[in-house]
View 1 (cartoon, helix red, strand yellow):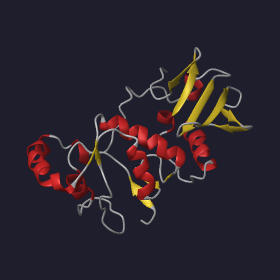
View 2 (cartoon, helix red, strand yellow):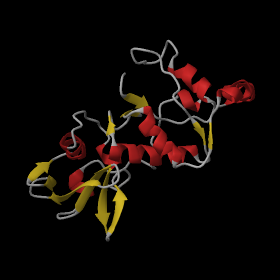
View 3 (spheres, rainbow, N blue to C red):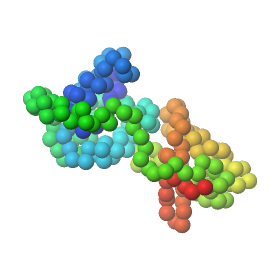
View 4 (cartoon, rainbow, N blue to C red):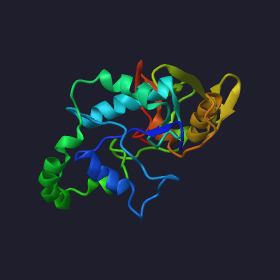
Length: 207
């Protein structure tokens, strides 16, 4: 896919992850994946989230729940330069893979779907979750934020004169306004509401 990179992390080696991505039983792009570059860092999961947030702000993320970004390897490398760590080298691959073979049997989480670990799923009825005038926001990247207000008379979130009767509708409209025409069903997991002057996730709200 010319001009598109998959930016992700693994707790194993890049070559093992590459083999999984190119396996015959997984979804693959028109041509096999190849490794442009990789970096060994501490707290890889946390850095991946931060990197995705930055890339979502400054580039075009193809889908909010996927790791594909429209940018060049040279541009991506600039972001990697900001992270402390050691650039991965093919010279170490053989030794690393030998060490990882035993761990691979015990840890198969890399090939499993990512599960959102934000606690117990909470209220999904806006009429019960929100109060009249309560503010709800959705953010893309760092500072592309929509802040709407819940209106009980409309049973929806009002933003810029338009009422959205679902969290997904509110979030998807924001993505569409940002030039991203895809949709997703994770509006509750991607929005926040204001409670006592603080913004909290709408994912685990009590009913």
